Length: 346
View 1 (spheres, rainbow, N blue to C red):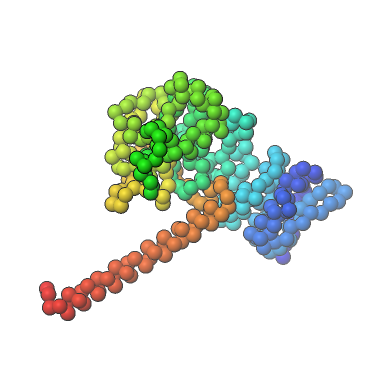
View 2: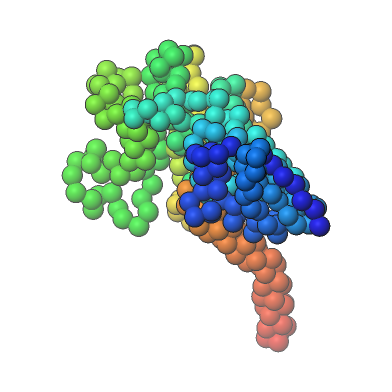
């Protein structure tokens, strides 16, 4: 058994470390099999960690990270869970350092920052490369962070306009059956892009940029035949683009432009038999200078903690089915051969 004592501030910082109903401390205790309690003395408050040596060392590392974050405000349970899992896997990272790298500020004054190591790498790649492909599960911030980087580039006059596009793939309901004109029919497909821009710029400011032509949101089909200069271009939901559409989009890039392509290869809505253009592009473009490919994992999910569990459950299900498929194929082949011999055919 081992014990480590960590000095901690009083008042708000101590409350931020513990979290609502001590949720942060309970998460650390559960993850590493240790006991954590607060000790007050003449020299101030301290956290005492008791338990097996490996668990105590890991828990102490996480608690020090939490204390750094707690200096700036409350630390949510999701951040604590992320720190625990990263430390348990031997991939410690200084999340507090991310707070110094604000991408931009929303219309309400909220700073937008990377929340995970995967997100930080993604943002850095966008800053350094002309084309970036962000591939990963839902809730990892692929689109939101790309839009934030686009807004930053526009505000800093690195580009003259932002162009956001995505394939208008029908998923269960035909466009023609929806009410309204063409714009009304395609708006639901583009809504996530509107939401991100509204949060960062405000509805009125966004509308002014649209009227001036500095922001454009359109279906992917509208990109054909254009050359896009001095623009920050984002292709969202790229897993629903065909190989031909993907090639068409990537070749629209003009002088002074940058592009970010985002998508989740596990959520393709393309009709059966049609390959995803994003899947193909990841293979074709890998290794080309000034093009970066970033893969997110379930650890980078910043939505509800259940989203991570759902993603992992589906991945486990897919792996199990993939392992069973060769056996099923062999069984079907053996049955076919048996019947073929029994029928006297050759």
